[in-house]
Amino acid sequence: MNYTLIFSIARALLVSRLRQTLVAAIGVTFSITMFIALLGFMTGLNKMLDSLVLNRTPHIRLFTEIKPNPVQPVSIYQPFRNHYNFISSIKADNSRDKIYNSRVIEKILRQDSRLAGIAPKINTQVFYNDGTVNLTGALSGIDVAEETRLFNFQDYIVGGNAFGLQSNSNSIILGKTLAEKLHANTGDLVQVITPNGDRFPLRLVGLYQSGLNEFDKTQGFASVSTVQKLMGKPDDYITDIQIKLKNIAAAPAIAREYAVKFDTDAEDIQTANAQFETGNFIRTLISYAVGITLLIVAGFGIYNILNMLIYEKMDTIAILKATGFAGKDVKLIFIFIALSIGLAGGLTGLVFGFGLSSLIDQVPFHTASLPTISTYPVNYDPAIYLTALIFSLATTWMAGLFPARKASKIDPVIIIRGK
View 1: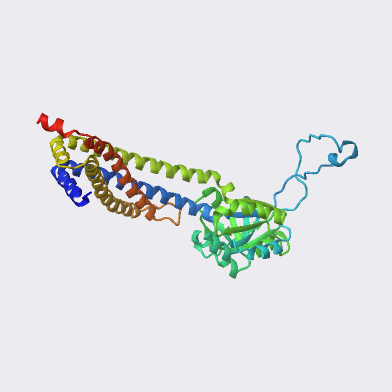
View 2: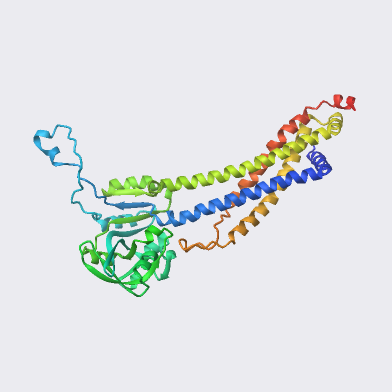
């Protein structure tokens, strides 16, 4: 089989219908351009949302949940010990919310090679005093260095400096919305009241803006030691251990392992954010569906053009078969035509898709709730461009296959006799 000759014949047929060929190639170009721009924008949006939620969420969280004692008095009372006892309105017992043996657990975790790092944390409810009004809020005791390294804490500080918590033991960082409600600026003293009624003045060293207004309206951050002092707890008092893994996919299995090993509650990121991951998957699926639909529409255009070309070139096909070209040779000629249109339109679409994505990436996008975002998010992952090119060639190959098979079955005797 002389591929050079077959390719030259395919090129001659393409040039003979240059206007229709250009129309088909433009259809593919438009489809690939929109496919890349749409998928790049949607996956970029998913990555942005991941950075807002998932990147600040530990892969595994160890904690002690306040829950009722599973052993109730009626169950250990001798006359009812062997009975089924149905109890309603059970209240939580007096168990503490701290993690037992937290220092030992931290030491073991730091030796685990599967972990990228850990960050101890204390969560407690407090009141923020605003004159004669006490605002209900939350206070988290954090290791600011580890929070910044593992969860990008510093990136969400819009005023002051996160590391002021380290240099000043009696300091606090407030959510930006909460600070506005308290009319507090960096350097001011903020009155914090614990659940026990103790009042502590803390110096405001920074403003935090997560992008979630309800969170920023109630949340404050201080160092672990400061929160321990406010609550009157010992220096081993920790309510949460946040874990970041090298492989996030292993989180569910490792969480179950730690729950048994340390006799504590463990929640993995997949369980905590199942609905969020479902939303990401659906947005990406819709993007692929729209892009593939555009390519299929372009494929129908190529199919129609090749069909018309076959009808117009019946005599040419008959002559080729009469001079010794086999049916598979004729079929290959039309497959080459289809793939040439797909390749030319696809490569041009990659260039235009990259240009359109770059244009979207330059459009300003400023919102008070997302301080780290300045332009619309776009993903330039090479896999998107490779996928677009593969879909382009696959669609045009399918579009050219049926007309090519029709051309290969033409009987030259009937065509020449008719002429």
